[in-house]
Amino acid sequence: NKGFEVQRSVDNQNEFKTIGFVGSHAKDGNSQTEIAYNYNDADVKEGQTFYYRWAQTKPFEIKLGQVSLLFTNLLLIKI
Image (cartoon, rainbow, N blue to C red; front, top):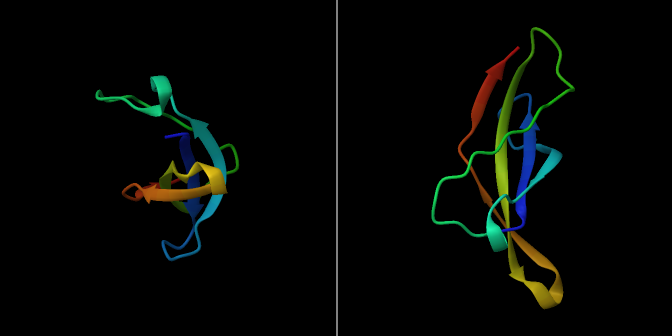
């Protein structure tokens, strides 16, 4: 894969917005072992609740430039 889109929502509905991108740490974008990733969201305010998910970007058809997304489980963070 190319990496992960970091997406955030304030209401846990379908209103997720991409707030960043983390490139793959795996050689050639593929690994058989677990790899740790992180992202620092600098745009948070105290007292708010945020829902995060990572969307794995995986080339679907390179010739056409299409990309498919595979979403991770949600992560709830209350600041």
